[in-house]
Image (cartoon, rainbow, N blue to C red; front, side):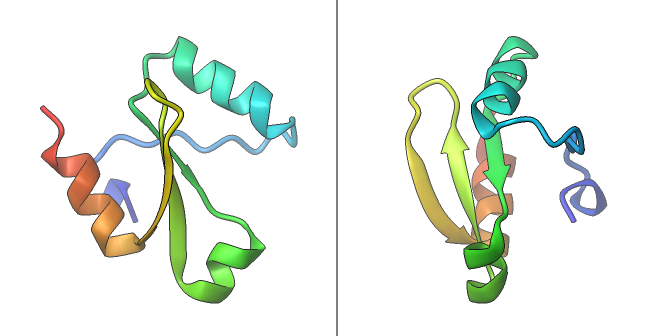
Amino acid sequence: RLRAEGLQAVVDYSGRKLASQLKQADAKHARYAVCLGPQELENGTVTLRTLATGEEVEHTREESIEIIRAEP
């Protein structure tokens, strides 16, 4: 969905632990990590993590796209 909205996105299918995935995303200078697990799928939300601060907030998918798009 992010790509369909014109945003860059990388998906990690490696099965590594979340901490390793976040470390790699940070090394690639990603601003955000979008986490989608069973709870988020059930709720129709995503957890948006700001990599610079470590802050995590649950948003609707549409809200998260707008937040990511608003970044310079």
